[in-house]
Amino acid sequence: MKKHVAMTAVCAMALAIFAAFGQEKQNDVRKIRSYRLKRDVPVEVIEGGNVIGGRKLLPGTIVDLPEERAAVKSAEKGEVAEKNSIEGVGAAPKEKAVPKTGAKRAAPERSLAMDQFRDRMSGAWLGQSIGVAYGAPTEFKCVGKPVPDDLMPEYKAEIINGTFCQDDLYVEMTFLDVLDRCGVDVDAREAGIAFANSKYRLWCANHNARNNLRRGIAAPSCGHPNFHPTPYDIDYQIEADFSGIISPGLPNRAVRLGNRFGAVMNYGDGLYAGQFVGAMYAEAYFTQDRPSVVRSALRHIPAESRYAEMVRDTLAAYGRDPSNWRTAWEALTRKYFTPQNCRFVSFAGIDVRLNGAYVLIGYLWGDGDMEKTARIATGCGCDSDCNPASACGVLGASLGASRIRGGFLEKLDRGRKWEFTDYDWDKLKAVSEKLVRQVVAAEGGRVERKADGSEWIVVPVQEPRPNAFVSAEKPGPLPDDVRLSDAEMVRVRFLPCSCAGGQSVPRK
Image (cartoon, rainbow, N blue to C red; front, side, top):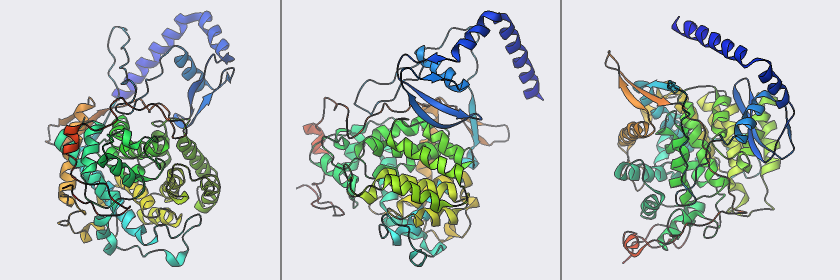
């Protein structure tokens, strides 16, 4: 009832304001119909209140959609949100000035019961573990072609403990640990030193970045194309889950965590991929509408990036035929599998745009069912354990562990630690909740205790603040302090690995 009264008052106020504006303002609205742009403006395309894509309009473009007119008008007035910058590269984002309009309007908020958060956080980690353990036997056995039925693994609870030796998970434990030790606003440089001191086996972009760090190249420069040959590998996409899991309803925090952790090993699309995945998790806590989760996350990466183009292509394919994932697979593979062009990747099958499409195929066409999601994401091939890990993890954040069928949680060895870490299942959950409380406070939210004793997470609704667009093809400038100092190098305990997948050797 209160909502209806409030809406009636708002409508009455709006009608009064509109009448006061008079005929002169109506003429202004008609003029905007043929509004011609004076400069490039990135514009979101909105349908029914949902962002369905984004595009850059060139000078001279005539804007006709009402939502685009509003966005353009705002952009021409300089009201477009500032872009984030990677830690140590470019200026920090500026805060918007609050207009002086008299009474301050309450900012919109979202809330989630702490018990629901705990269930969905557990579901996110469990879903990721199910996906990676299920797909592991097929990893890279089928590149550029789907996994045939006779190679598809059996979906059963007994596979779950395969999670403990997977880089999808154990790299994230390093990130959580440095956040726990150094605070949720730890900088990229400190994150890089923690990564340099990890002992687990690494491949591709992770391997290249860690070796750069151990040679004295500081983060985020260690992930910059000037030093890093494969910044479009899949690596941060597969280990960005933590950034959204500890940022419920706070996608801008997931983006900033990407700038501190993802920029260590990836750049451009390689970084945006992880920021997109983190933003998906942040949104998934609050809805089970899968296309809505994808559209929301899309707003948090640069619209002009090729990764964003891939997301739009996948959404469009789902809109055309939501019942047949193989049709989408064929179209997306044809466009994004480019073995003839392997620049900035270790090999064609690990390209982040291609594997990102396969994550979304599993997530969208999986119909909200964990087993179906795992099977489809695995069936797409290429990095066919990492892709179901991401798809199933995001789905788990919506479902919660209590709604994941199959007995996986019961079969999980809760006392076992992930390879070369100090994290078992219970510590993973405890640290995740501890960090969430800190992140919520840092983002202007709060944890409220109700009269019945229950706790609720309350967070502000965030407007997207994606990074400024850069690419490996045309990289941005390096920061001034590229190298680790002598004092910092003393803290790096291991030599560069002689080969990908090799064990770390201590410095003497």
